[in-house]
Length: 619
Ligand SMILES: [Ca+2]
Ligand SMILES: [Ca+2]
Ligand SMILES: [Ca+2]
Ligand SMILES: [Ca+2]
Image (cartoon, rainbow, N blue to C red; front, side, top):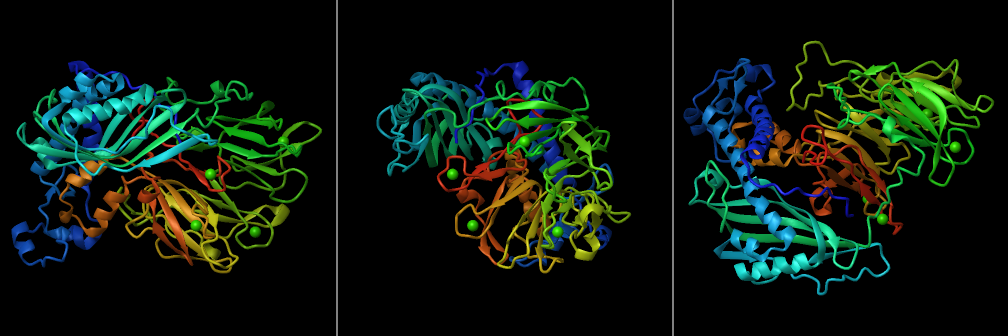
């Protein structure tokens, strides 16, 4: 799918801008470097162990054993905790990230040359002994789409390398497929350590590239894939300027063309007042909330048209649907006075809780129903309340009544538990609550009786699905920290199943399920944290000084979304990378739906964060 891409601004190397970018980049890098440097062991025995001289300890370690964490060179950090990295190692990580920022500045003129189709400028970046590997391009500027709204081609890489002159020819041919190039990027998730060895050292960078814009002859076009860049001439204090690219190898290159954007924006005509909603980027309030609400669909007034409940900061809106994609504000003022995460914020759901003509609306822990006479939502008396929490719906006990799985609102971690970013102990949030529907009396807490909440993981989202062949629905919870939770429903009671992810599985923001590959077994798509900078930092770390469990957590925390293909009977295989659905950025939730009606589920993967700026989200 081609997404609307912000125009890339021309970014000449100027002291002011370079310094500002450097400051932001250094802040991000320092955070990561600080986290891995300060990682400390959790068990008392490891904490009590004295620091051991590395040379002595490693001499007793076999080649196949990972060195004991206690054997690493440790020193107390400012808070008195053990640090696995000595100052030289930390400085090296800092220098490597700084070099990557300079590499980014070196790439800017190359991007500008490709955007402009400036052959002389392209050539000036390439060394005389340049060698490249590129794919053959489809012939002709007008690519055939047939009767489809879009088409994609996997481009075979040429057998033979090309020189600098041929590379410029190839880039010019690429450019000729575009009317306007709006985005060029070569994002690095790995640089070789030689990048800081000085101008004579040949360094390698690896990552994902993308060239996108409007297609010659109309429509949109995107060329993307992986790259390996061989470069030389990096000065420790400034970006290289000319003849610095020695090798460029493109891999797994895909070309996607469409006649237009696949989705049409209808904000202005749909009747929803989006200006009333909170916007992190335009709000002058310095305490920006990270969470700003959600959207819930259901036929609240039972007129056969789906209605839209929009929850925001401090209040919510109910828009009544007309069945044609337009809505009218019902006038209901869902004022929220339930404080979560420092803001008045309501979680919601629309579902048939107790039978009746119209569904119940759960909003901020209270139940509402549509009142035909008053023509608005009214509080449903007598049902009682449930915690104001994100909720996942399911009839877990198969009695015909929908039950509530309320997330991160239950028992607190045991007293004295210490939260760590890199920890699998699930002590970083509250437990979940399974609330059984007992009819008009409301809901009863059956968490303990059913075993529905192992640990105190901070579960952000959950999905109910059939992971095996019995009729009892199973559940997967996405935990922000600590391993995700996968519970198999045996008979209305739960036990924790084997890990879905064999590496770690966690650092998750959301999850959705569906049969992605059409084999009849339900698969999982999990939205995760993602960071190219994090991948670079971890690739430069000497991971052998960390315990195996920590290494797995490091990598899991930056690798992005996961697609777990079900093999049936509670087992899964990780198909994230071959599926091409992992590197979407910092993921939040996600949805599976057949958008183009070809019978195959498509992925909607929202992503981004709030710490850089509105048009350059993290990741
Ligand atoms: Ca309706
Ligand atoms: Ca039930
Ligand atoms: Ca499947
Ligand atoms: Ca589809």
